[in-house]
Image (cartoon, rainbow, N blue to C red):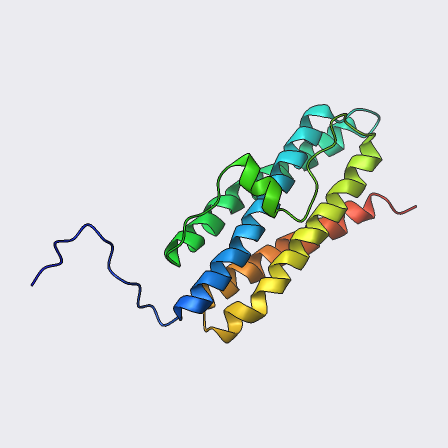
Length: 165
């Protein structure tokens, strides 16, 4: 007999309801961090000035484009686990572990420092979720987290190299 109710069928993907809730919650925090870092990076792309303008303007564009392309897979993984992805500034502000962009654009190297801290924070968020996804046998989430860790750690390293004397 066909399911004629308007309710979606229960999710049976081999991950317990409890683990799906916890992983989706963690991924929601990752999404908030990623979106906040995206917005900050885009802000800095628009507002960077000084002798490193061309280098930083282009670098920030590559970075915000990568971050923009990351938000959709994170949100879609949350949806795949049966949960609603956060999507408002209020939700992101409440969930993000990194602060919003400064109201007034800082100097170029201060922007770089802020972005280093942001990428390191997002890496910590992703790393904090990984053990749960791994224990739950959630390979798609674990793979997504591994990919995000690699990007954020490499980007933080590249930005830090601009601060070395």
